[in-house]
Length: 179
Image (tube, rainbow, N blue to C red; front, side):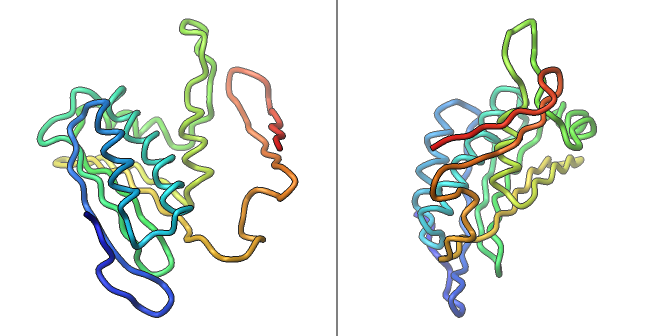
């Protein structure tokens, strides 16, 4: 089980690594892995699971066939940031990363579904996402801000939420409002 490596002030530090096959059952293994990260709060683990599941699902569905030993996932807390990294080798990742600077969701009329909404969700959950193709290993890094105890830090208002989304191939903007 992953555990914190040490304590330093009020900011916990830790690091853990998981190795996965490129199969749908790996999504459940990733969730169990993140749930066991004692150096993260429950809300921090929830954000990592949501974003991590989306990245892993995309790797399994769209980057096949993966080469080598599968996918390594590393979660870490360093200083005032939380990191989630995916390490893998896919022959098509470099071309995907080159045309994916800041993609907007688009409607696929052939399959009658939206594409890219999951990456928008990941960008909203993370402070940053980096796609790094390499000659030996491809990497996706996500950086998250830690949770704080103040209500002002929450992106959701107590009485509901409002979020604007820009979509390519559909309405120029949409407003989602919920309770």
